[in-house]
Length: 157
Image (cartoon, rainbow, N blue to C red; front, side, top):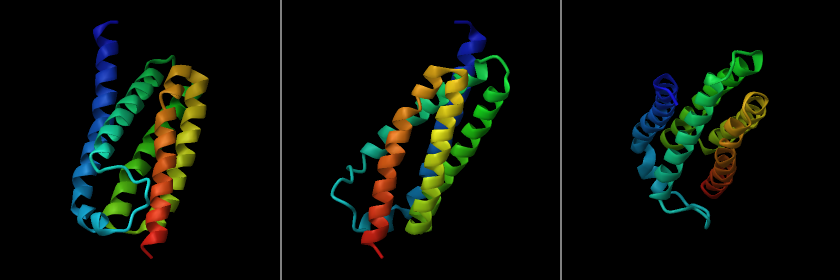
């Protein structure tokens, strides 16, 4: 693989992980209230979240890089747009949930993110099957996050 291709992967992964890091830094201020909230029994220990999210951001970045490196088509361009939109929703969900403590609004925001991920997987599959498959763990985790978000909202009304 030549340097240009490697550089594309590096940039997409670095950018995507950076979005997660910045979201994590901003949301660290809201963690105190969340830590006091009643949580469902299936809530993982706190150390699990940054590990899982880092892996997911890397997979997202690799998938987006594969799409970027694909021949230019309408589907490719649409895939990159939906990637950016879902990343925007991903970033702001953390702020809504942790900093604003708007658990109900965050749940509905997360449902939009979930639909965007499904759309991204579908559009990615038209350009690069592996890029689409790399997003499946993200979809599964966001589905689990929706369960956690919903139950935190219901338990802390």
